[in-house]
Image 1: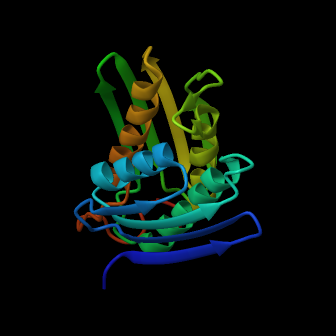
Image 2: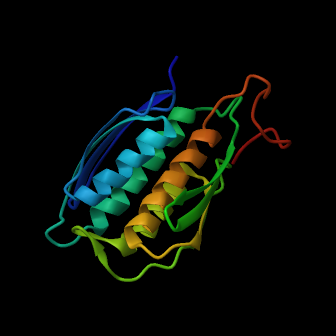
Image 3: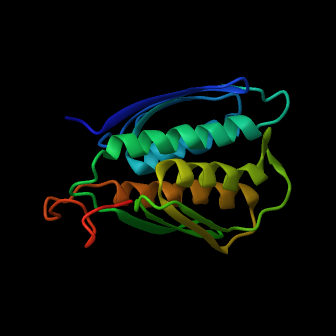
Amino acid sequence: MGRTAKVTRKTRETEIIVELDLDGSGKADIATPLPFLSHMVEQIARHGLIDLTVRAKGDVEIDGHHTTEDLGIVLGQAVRDAIGDKAGLVRYGSATLPMDEALVTAAIDLSGRPFFVWRIPLPKAKLGTWDVELAPVFFEAFARSSMSNLHLRLHEGDNLHHIVEITFKAFAKALCQATRVDPRILGVPSTKGTLA
């Protein structure tokens, strides 16, 4: 049975549908009202080797906050659903990746205990129509909804587009590692016998 999930969230502010396959090849079909956010979520699919379909509508005439946060929530829930009982799960993943002058580390633990650390200082600015300050909003929503411990840290970088994009790519690579199944891992990857 495949490690797939479909999650829908509908509120007065947004309507989000996410379908994913953790054992995919990186196929992406992403539609949000925020083109830069769509581009970033496509990076998660491509570099995380996750087949991902996203349909998102939101009140972007107000701003992009609700759509960005709710997409993080729904994506996190879909990952949590797809990994199931966590038997054989690698659990941990990390990646330090460059993009020109920018260098970012992402580290994740699918521990069942949510925590979020953001060490990427960003100015109040826009990339396209998307507010850059929404990057940590997306990742924190993902961490809490997926019940994971997520750390993101900038080592170097000047170009705002490079910094944000390599953050999403590093996250994707770390998530790809953490969601793999290793046949050598017997049961749940914890000496406690549970991840929660």
